[in-house]
Image (cartoon, rainbow, N blue to C red; front, side):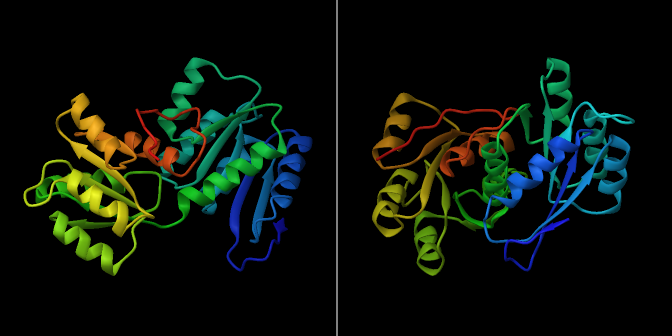
Amino acid sequence: MDLTLGSPAPVKIMIADDSATVRKFIEIALQEAGDGRTLSVTSVSDGREAVRGLASEAYDLAFLDINMPQIDGIAVMGALHLQKAETFAISMSNALSDHSETLLKSFGAYDFLTKPFTKADVRRILTTFDAIRAPCPILVVDDSATVRRIVTKVLGRSIFNLDIVEAESGAAALDRIRKQGFRIIFADFNMPGMTGVELAERLATDAASADVILMSTEYTDALDRAAERVGARAFMRKPFYPEDVDSILHHLFGLRHPRFSKQVRFFATT
């Protein structure tokens, strides 16, 4: 079923639930989202149909009930994981055990909706999907080529769609910023010539639209206070991991943290 909202590029969505009422409810909520694009929705009533459909076509977004006949929603998520599918998957049920939560998280489910949920919950999922899949230009600034490569690799494993550019110094970063806008800048604290703190101070006027995240292998209260003082949005201690990046980006984009995510320390500056 196509829910045409005005865009030529449809978002392919699967709704898998043995309740026709739930499937229709989600379809209506998507239709009422009114965000200006075409949503191509496929509804199935059991887990076996879901696995077949997800194996034969690439879906952008899937709402998967945990308790379905034939194959349950956890096994469906397991199949998606084995396929290395990039489907943005949401699990649904009236309750979730610790064991099921562990499995769903390991299989890559993004979030869990507790039944009964609202149309606003469905719209929030669609909005979050848009934010995560939208291209986001990122600048990584570090004087060490090895560290830049490691940070770039970690950022590349984020669930967000990050377009990553590197700079080897504060001066090189300012040059790249003059040529291209960046949404977020990851800058090392300790760089020769221009420290991360000094770069952040410059960026406060030269790139006001960019959020700065300062990085360091050390952590002290003084470094933390310095990061806040120059308007950085967060401090990240190296080494950090994709789930740390995802947590910070949820904060920066004003997205609610999903149930299966890790939360890290974050501060907002004014």
